[in-house]
Length: 282
Length: 248
Figure 1 (cartoon, helix red, strand yellow):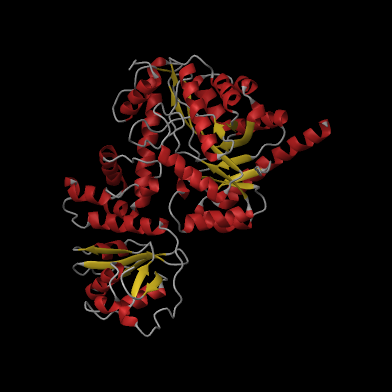
Figure 2 (cartoon, chains in turn cyan, purple):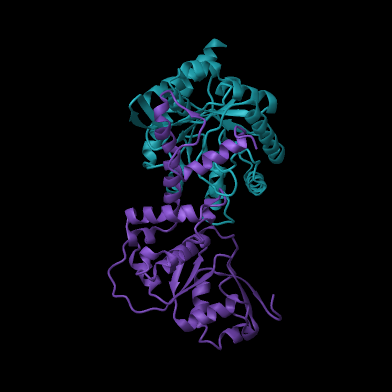
């Protein structure tokens, strides 16, 4: 199965279709699966044209893989149809949940890390990979609270998930920085424990911040340029892994295409440096 | 069910999204800030669903203003939260909600404006189907012909000037005096993916409704001269098949 090129990619916004078709700066595009679950029309026409031009990553935000109540079979079937139709180079989802019962909450909600939740999520990842007939990537979350019931660290949880299911990981470096700031842990220590061998893609995005009496609370807003400390962590990760397909995510207050390309160009420079370093070491 | 199971925890978390207090069992470096941290999730849910609704109903938002729309969306979201992660199908009930929402009772047309906006979204995402050739109606037995219309085709009618109100809120629209309703329109998607909202008179509307129901051209023509309806459908590529004989 073809995979994503180890260069920078951009999240696709319909207003940038013409520029996206013309650019050679990026190696792949990413779309949210749920925006392409209509029957037809412009979204599918654009995605088909873009896939003739670029590699495509389909990134789900709707599977609610952390639901205690099981996966929605209708949604899994829609996903299968989409994946079968476009044969994307990558499919990824989130370590989060968004629905318990009927209502759809449209946010990536956190879960405790326990042997029980690990077993549930492993079963769900197995079900997704069996249904789609491919390996999926799962993304580490940005969180604002933790659970008293958690008995496993997030990195131990993800390491065990990879070991049991064979899935890959999508490392969101901004999410690491946001969670580390919010929960007052060391992002570098987290990344030292992260199972980097399983990482098939990296996400970079911007965040907002709020001041609480006890210190800063960062919000994963996807509405700003990637912050400097996140670029630094990213370069440190690549120094260990070599180049990895890297997506610039900018979903709110989307700027013009030139601004997005500048972020992708900055990622490409770090990717090239990592590639040179790898070649020199060989 | 044990209160500390994963399912019980999610149930409590979800319930708390709509309430004031955070659920039990959450921690943070400063425990007194758990509520402020939990509020990020509550705000994300409210904000993202409100913006999804505003994206689907931009003219309704213009008509009532963003602050009022946001407050109104909050009520609608609590009453009719989306049931599926595919939000492009959400909002079908918004028009009916507005019909019954007392604070906008004086804006009798608002529900119809919402239904018009929702229909445009349906047209945008409808299945693809190739139009017939321009000469498809140049046949001998025209009277017996039945048409298959494009899956995006919908017929809109309002006893109010809801279509005119929607039109005056489009970018670049000038100021026009409104005439009394009823308003009628053909909604569909052209082959270049543009969304068509074409005002039609009541006779043409009746012809379109008959054709959409699978009646023959002769039968549809009993309502009015079908020339305007057929011209409109052909011009926008909204006829995808023609049939003679019994209803397909």
